Amino acid sequence: MKQEHLALYLINLSLLFLFGCTNQNTETEGTPLPFYNSADFTPEWIGEEEVQYSEIHTIANFSFQNQSGEVINNKSLAGKIYVADFFFTICPSICPKMTSNLEKVQTEFINDKSVMLVSHSVMPWVDSVSVLKTYAEMHGIENRKWHLLTGHTEEIYQLARQSYFAEKEIGLDKDSNEFLHTENFILVDGLGRIRGVYNGTIPLEMDRLITDIKTLKQLG
Image 1 (cartoon, rainbow, N blue to C red):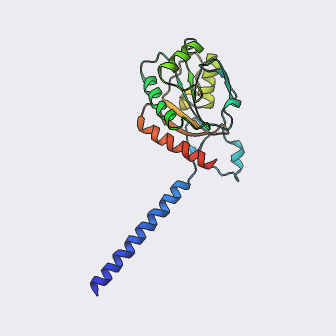
Image 2: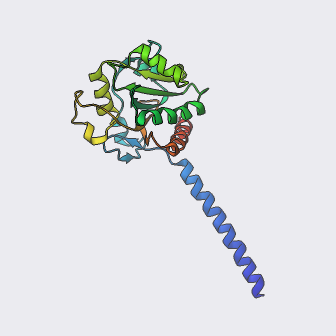
Image 3: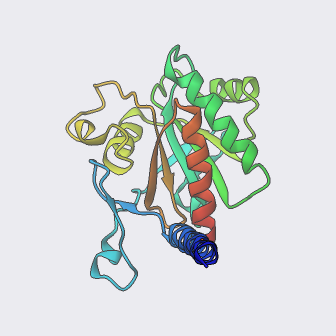
């Protein structure tokens, strides 16, 4: 009898563990991504029924040229999930790593028109349209998927620091005379809201980014 009780106990324990794990996974999968409304990148989970929902931070209006000479602006990316970063073509340090890592994201979503990549040059006085075109060709960048943007320095720097919070809090008080350099990738949803921040120099972070993009797609 003792052996029968022990066997029954072990079966019940196994079932409890199994259903416990299942419930935990279901809750995790159903958890939406947070919003980021400030430069300290504090995550906030805000429901549509909450007053703060209408006040969620969004990326400001912008208009730049890509490597094909096309004008890319907010309307171009409306309804798209996109990853934004900041680089320059002659960067010898972190930019090559960032570009290489972002290529993995490009490959993952190459046929998905709802997902875009947007890299802003922080040296637009060097990175002209033709320079960006050459860079794109060298790195296998697909023009229809990945925009390399150039424009006025002041506009790019203000957008980076005030809208994307690219340099976190320390960037808020800087102006365009202070060089902008950041390893952050910023995930933006179809309504222009920040939903994730990632270290663009770490390959493992791209797995998290790809997973979050897929989560955003499921959320609609």
